[in-house]
Amino acid sequence: MKKNRLVLENLLYVMKYVYQWKKSIYLSIVVYSIFLGVSPFIWIFTPKLLIDELTAGGEAEKLLKILILALLLSGATGFATEYLQGNFRMKMNAVRYGFIRMLSDKAMKMRYHYTEDPKTLNDIHIALETIQNPQKGIGLIILKLFSIPGNLIGFFVFMAILYRLNPLILLLLVLTVYLSYLAMVKAKNYERGKKDELAKERREFYYGSATMSDFQYGKDIRIYGLKKIILSKNITAREKILSIVRSIQKHIFKASLMEGVLSLLREGIVYLYLIQQVVSGSLTIGDFVMYTMAMNNFITWMEATMKDLADIRIQALYVSDFREFLKKEEPVDSIKIEEGVKVAAKGKNSKEDISKEENPIEQYSIEFRKVSFLYPGSSRYIFKDFSLKIKGGERLALVGINGAGKTTLVKLLTGLYQPDEGQILINGKDSREYTRTEYNDLFSVVFQDIKILSFTIKENITFKDGDINKMRYEKALVQSGLKEKISSLTNKDNTMMLKVLDEEGTEFSGGENQKLAMARALYKDGNILIMDEPTAALDALAEYKLYQEFDAMVQEKTAIYISHRLSSTRFCDAIAFLENGKIIEYGTHEELMKLNGAYANMFQIQAAYYQEEKANQKKEEVRS
Image (cartoon, rainbow, N blue to C red; front, side, top):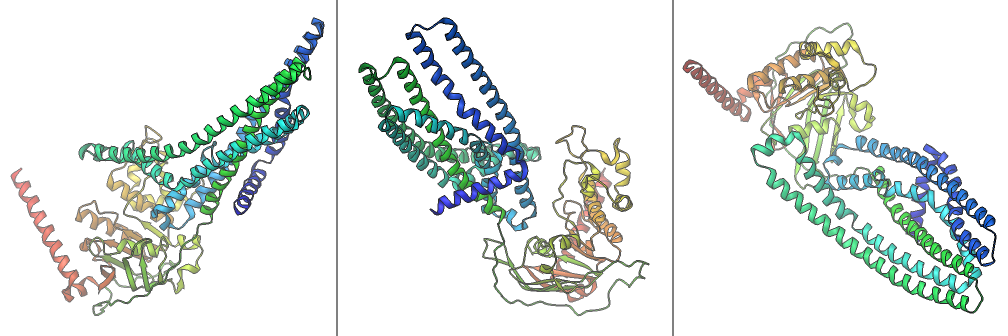
């Protein structure tokens, strides 16, 4: 009963959106049902009329009239049903695209941590299957809802004809078809039970296939010989998929076998009965032909209708997966653990206060207050009872070795992840009290992994395809150093990036991509700017220069610079040295060097390395 109620709720859910987006579908269903319900009876009654007329010595003219009328009716209904089917499919696709938009909107708005959760990725795959394939899920439901009313009209007319023949014959037909229906429902339920397992393996298979055809991996595949391992994993996933599909098909085969046995039994009994009725003189040859065709059509019609109902029942359950995905919420966990922080003696800021502009920039203070965090599915805490204060307008450098927690801290600050315990305060206000849009608007971030989209240069910077703030855009181009590069291109900033969609697309160098990322951050004009180590591929001197250039652009805004190269962030007001999710040292560059701790040790090691590298370069120059 619970499952039946769920099926009904999901059908009403789909029908609600069908009415909202394409209500004319319902009129199409009514008209189509009439033509579909009438069409089979033309060639059930026509042979009877012709045979009865022939056996009675009828005139050729009358026979011709019956045949022409049947052909005209058949042609008209055939044309109408084909036309309505084509028209309906276009409307159905419009509805499916509406559901696809709903899924895409949810996927882009949901909490960031879900993008790294395998279960959620499986859920997305299942939800997408529910709406993307017109022969599954919502597409199949709409398709079957279009044909079932007409099938039901024909079904009841067939029942009336066969009831006249013999009620027991009708009962036999209905009972055997219903047993076939139950067997098929059982097989379909087994198929649904395998959906999660199948989704996981398909996602792995699609990933392998996509990687093999993705040009981004072209160099690594060739240089490192990745072909063998990728193919191996792809084949393994494929074999698992085939194994699951074989088990599903085995259950469907059993249901089909049962249907065949019931069909043989049913038709044997009915034909024996019809022959006996003709021999006894109870039926004419015309009646025999009519009832034979009615029986065959009824069975076909009923089997199709029952199969459609079974499909709707099962596919309606898949709609639950889609609806649950749209309602997905974040889990809440709270655990409190303590830690200690070693702080250097504070001295005077290395950067003097500067005079305010006529329209001063709004400055935002940041505070991590006893924040604890671990990644979903992990038992290891990245931060435990972590605290940090950043003054409004302050430039803070976050430094430390890889894995210290620098990037995770940025993900927490920007709201991509939520703390398991504690608070993140912006100007004294809990970050969770902001709306998502308000909070996102606070930040301009240059991430480690710079993503270039196959859009125009202007769209890659502004992320808008309409009106933009031209003054701010031009300023961002000049400040980021991209102006000269863009001016050299034939189509200027309307040049497409990458060659994915346009063979004339341009591909920037690594340094130019970093400038583009800076231009994005400058154009967005957030009041808190973050550089999350986007220059790791550059040499130390180039990174230092880029950080200095970016720092000159941020003016009096609060800024956070992340780097494992300590020389790049010496200009900052304060430096926090992270290790294993803890701030073990805090102060200016000079203060931390005097502390002679972890920061000073790493700085000296890096300085010695760069001096050695510089000396080797000079030797090479002398030799050449």
